[in-house]
Image (tube, rainbow, N blue to C red; front, side):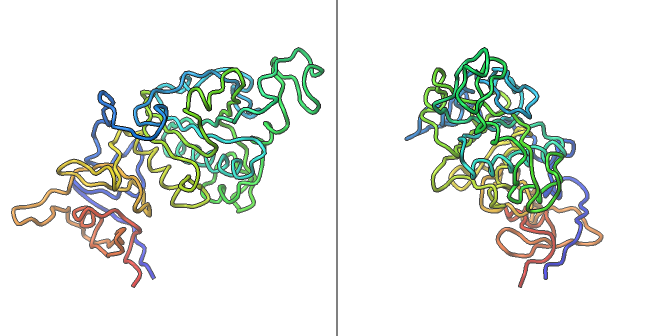
Length: 336
């Protein structure tokens, strides 16, 4: 079995980076964001899906009855200065509701750790959307007239308390009614409804598809775009959940993203910022300094605490793993 231990590291150059918090950033992470002065090349995607694309300018109604701004018409510019996650879903989609539950838990988990990240969902337009009303008689059967717009039960069920499909087991969210696999969760973040007039999916997002996810930097530039189809993020899969959460943490700290296709510059290596997140996107950090013999300069540990690296090798310390450019899979020895 893996021997678990609590790492105690001293001095500069190394840190237990399994749980990054804005009040206690990892040494060596004080880097600038990727510059959008000369945006990275982008082939095969609509401009709205390319890195450094501008925040869309649409203004739509918030149809989430649990949102603080229910029935107000506004846009993503309301979250200026924050990392913002925009997900694309549609009514009558059980998978979409499940994903939204995980995103709500992720937002709550990040907030508890001091990361103020904005989340929003954009619902695909449907036939009844965008109908104005003065009274319920102006709406179709089963719809209500609220603040001048017709609202359907389909919209409402997207955000009302529903099965969390295990999301609530990840974190004791205030929006969960318990911490079991069958716990119910209430979506509190804004849910915008696309309209025939705006048609934001097409006009502002290059023909967006259900399950797409956009992540915008605090300055409104697109930092990450996750496709739909076969390579979509599925948050019930813990690696996918951790991958997005780690990305949001690092973007909130203003770091340079990296992966196998986007390596770091000279003197840096690509580190996953959360324990157990291996092989996905990470963020560039300086290499551990070495002495004249080439040996890593790691702080002295009175009680050495071995760690298991993402390469499934055991290292004497987190610093030793970092000196080899290896992120942490777990604390303690790797399984034999």
